[in-house]
Length: 391
Image 1: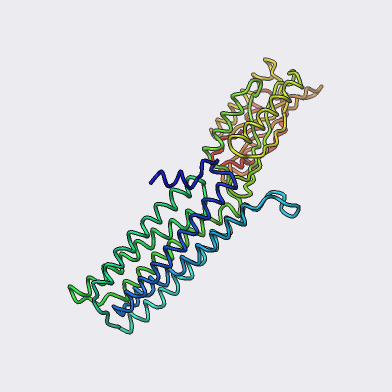
Image 2: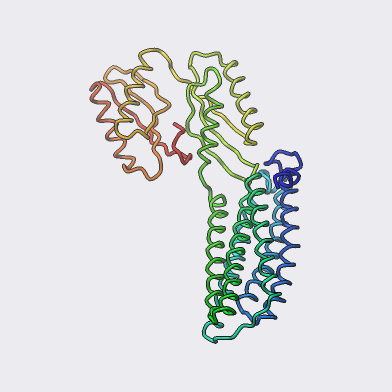
């Protein structure tokens, strides 16, 4: 099975547009072909048994074939190169395709539920057919294979659209299993549960649609950077000489494999400017090669003499006493005849228990405790990274 996934990737980088287009084409074509076959088989089974749940399940497969067409078109559009009107490419079309798939799943769930209610209150009788049972059992096996295939391929290329298709296939396995069990219950125990089975099928479909919609809406609305990716960026950047820290990381997602990022890198104020600039250029190229992220890095000079470093650590300790998640950066000292300005930024995560003004007030109180001569000038920043690691 893993050989099939490797063959679909074609030896290319998972985030490369050409690789994603190939995977999307294979997944979409397989979905269209198999779902049309399942639709025809279940229509035959539903006709033989007069089961509304079975016919509803068949229509669901026809809907899946249509959404596979959407996925196929979406990947092709997303694979287009950047142009004058879309300088960051068309990668977000893949998210839109996933959202259309999710909306189609939700609509189908509503329709299946309506048909099931009509059957439940109409108390229609179903007929037993061994052929129908064989078709349903085969459909479950096919749908489980489609679930495994799309999930594995979706995770390999980090595709929300393909993950939504996989979730839909798993939901279809469960819903077809419910139809199969209801058919057996009717034949062996005389339980007329076709309508209830249809309602369960509708519930599975609606749940899948909601989860798929949520997973595709998040990147469209703008989600934070994955904490694992943020940690690896920390490791790469801080692994270079003369980089003292990074902060103010901002990440923009323009579709899988199409991202931009900016952050501030702290460097020694007394370092060689040309050498530091060369290091920054090298980091930008390294991040592009490894994570396919176009990066813009701003250099922040940091005074590294003993007195400044010691005072900075004292202020950082005060921030940690307020809450361990608080970090400071851009720390500098401006002496004056009356007082000494301590100018710095404090990084506060979204949803923090204290308001920005309260954070400033408590930091100011702690700094005044060090010396009444200090006058803090504090800028509150909010982290764009979910883990709050950047600071």
